[in-house]
Image (cartoon, rainbow over the protein chains, first blue to last red):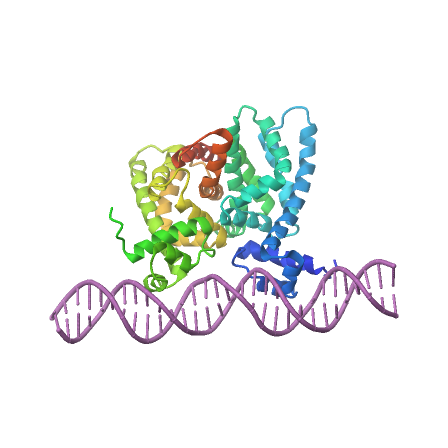
Length: 208
Length: 208
DNA sequence: CCAAAATGTAAACACTTGTTTGAAACATAC
DNA sequence: GTATGTTTCAAACAAGTGTTTACATTTTGG
């Protein structure tokens, strides 16, 4: 673990953290380059523009995520009999945990970024995900279809997005929620425990 | 319905719409004053600062919302036997619809603003709501407690925020979702119909 | 080892931002 | 009427933005 990282890498790390807890518009390139301890111009040199930098931050996350998700989906697809809804949803846990690496409890930069991206650009993020990661997500929704074959396509669509909302919103604000829970109920939970608490809620809602 | 409105009112209207579909940081005072057809300086004259303007937009919405919510909660509180979870959740429908006035289908400025506010300011919005609207929301959560007395306080807390996430996220992005549903399933729905679809999902999740 | 390509750097650029200013226009009261 | 307080307005302000430039410096490959 030498802290000699490439400039590109340092910029991505700094940008990820700053975007996550300040937002995209609220984070200036100067703030990023100061934190990364690199020259201001190097962002435009390596990434071309601020917009491309944002996209690069997402791509790094999403590639890690879908790689892990793929691994989780393999056994389900091989399995002859249909999985349960809970089983399908559970394939998300490890990828979500893995993608953030070692983080303090109850914090997910990835989810914060997703939350911001969905909120800031009306529909833009949904389109981006659809266009760039449709095949990966399709494998997931296929399994959900197997688990709940009685659900019509449009019902499936809405409940899928209901679940998406719950997950992103909860995990994006998980830091604040954990602090409240800690103060009010002396309840200290990890991000993974929160996810485990979330999944039954989702499964129940999804099954109508 | 004369279109002679006070300057303050015109600013609020323009700001509300622009904040809702561009975000706070992404909307400049010049954009707002141009749209409202008022002088740039009048924002600072009437509201003091951009930050106060944002708060004013929220206050106008929230006051309308809690006023309607109060009316819905009255019968439940008078009622002797405990309400069902579905009944409690249903008290939200009319206030949510009323607060946006006459809008095109599947759009809610209020929810878009809430979504942005929650995403942009990490925990800040939760605190603001807690401090300024706690008594109103307490009445709502009290009814939820009556409907599900077996739920421990911490469980209640989490599931409440799970539901909050689903509602805000879904309704904030409802415009995009409706467009997709329209294109893919030839399914044209109003915002209220979406809410009616959402409530069973929430109730099921809430009841574990 | 040395030319060539890649990377790092400081300074400037053009532009937008929220806010303030001081005078003009308007309204209201006496 | 004049006086008084409120609201509008054009202009300027200082600060911050992303991006580009032109020049070092470092790294690479023959």
